[in-house]
Structures are given as C-alpha cells and as structure tokens.
View 1 (cartoon, one colour):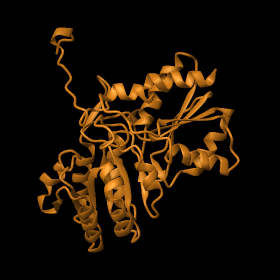
View 2 (cartoon, rainbow, N blue to C red; view 1 turned 120 degrees about the horizontal axis):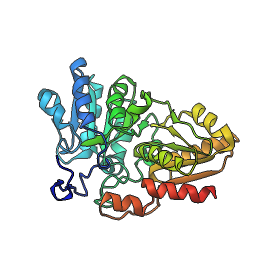
View 3 (cartoon, rainbow, N blue to C red; view 1 turned 120 degrees about the vertical axis):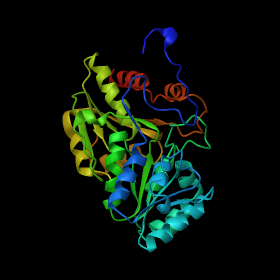
Length: 333
C-alpha cells in the first residue's frame, strides 16, 4: 500500500470500540475469544455466558464454535451471574463476560453472595476497563479494581496485552475459585512478546531495569510504562518497569524487593482511579513493611470522567506516554 498521504486509509473509530493500539503497533484480533475456544477444545466443562454482549466481548467466537455451550442471558446482569453460580454448582466452568461497569456496579451483590461467598469456579472477564472507552461515566469502569479488591475469595487480574490474555485464560481455568479479569478485546496490542513473558497468577515480573525510576504498573499502563522507559532513555533517565498483572493477591515479595533497590523514585501507574486500586495497595504494602522510597501515583482522578476520543482523554488525564514522561521528569527535578 502506498504511504502517500492522499492514499492512506482513514482510520475509523468510535468512542465505544476504539482500539488502544497506536498506529502501526502489532495487534492480535480477539485474543480472549480465541483462547477460550482453544480451552473449550480441551475441557468439556467450559461454558460461555454473557448479557447481550457476545460481539463486544469476543465471546461470539465461542458461541460459533460451541453453540450448545453458549448462554445468552439478555440484558440482565444480575440473572447472568446468578445463573453462572448455578452452573458452577452443577460442575460447569462458566466464563462470563459483560462490561466492567455492569459487573462492578450493577451486579456486585450477586457476585458477592452467589459466587464469591461459596468460592465457586466462575471466571469473569469484563471489557471497557478504566479509560478504554470514551462513552463517559456510564461505561467507564474507573473504580472496578477498588470494588473487587474488597471482595473476599476473589482473584483480580489486569492484563497488559494480547499475549497475556491468551496465557491468562487457561491460567484462570486452572485456578480454584472465582476470578475477575479486566478484558481488552478487538484488535489488542502485543508488547510483552519482546520480554520472554509468561503470565502466572499472583506473580509480578520485572520487564526491564533502570537506576533512576521504578514504574510499578498493571494493564495497559504497563504498555505505556515501557514506552515511557524507551522515551526517557533519550534524556539519560533509567526507568525500570515492574508489571503487576494480579492486583489480588499481590506479589508482595517482588514488589518489596524492587522498591528497596537503588533508592529509586517509585511510581505506580494504573488505568483506574487513584483511590483503592494498585497504587493504594502498593503504598499500604510499603508503609506496612517500613519501606519508604520517594513515591508517586499516576492514575485517573477521583471524578466522573469526560466523554470523547481516547487519545484526547488520555492526554487530558495524563496517562498518555508523553504526559507520563513529562510528569516523571518534573518529579525528578
């Protein structure tokens, strides 16, 4: 294809389905849907369930491959999770999808009472986490991690890219008990393949080291942290990146070990409100263990966020690569 500006295809996006991938970035299509189909080939107990959002959570791939194991519950999220609990009681392994706002705000009590209290094997994967849609507060799940961190028995995962999602699905199936995972869907960036990465529940991984700053991050903010590290190399600033995909349980040993090293500025970056998420979890861990490096948080404000195009919103709320780079340089002065 010609690179002449007049012949370049125009990128079409919407606030709901806009990709978080940068122009020219490697992506994989529907990693969750493909991984679940692969899992279902090996495990006959896997069922897929959704609340009228199969197409928008990549579960349509599972529905096509295994229509007899797919359950479309309609726009009834409380019914969805109650039914998933019943399926688990009968020996099925339900993978349940919806938007994160609907699970965290609309069906929280049903997940709490019907699934988590009985420690059932229900695996919940929810799209549009944090600021990955521009549709405004009705669809932006800026507080889901805070809510689900507080739920007993629940494992909480925030994956970075397509590779991690592909590895996360079978790991969720092997794990005993309920799991909540944030879901990136559609054309999802691939970044962790450059680091020989393997996902493990409850394990944080150092992706790169740096003498001046340690960024502790989860989800798409690990992708941003890696971009920031490369950008700040030009200013001779060494940035280490510790990826923490499991928000609960935290890998306390790795986080404490890395936070103690080199007297670095420690920055927690998350695609979530600064209240109740990874930042406050890490801060409590450090203080509770007498580890007190210089500490800062990068995250979404305690506010209802605006609607609009994602690049504009990421700049506005200072979670874009350029905004994070500038913020860190100010903190190091």
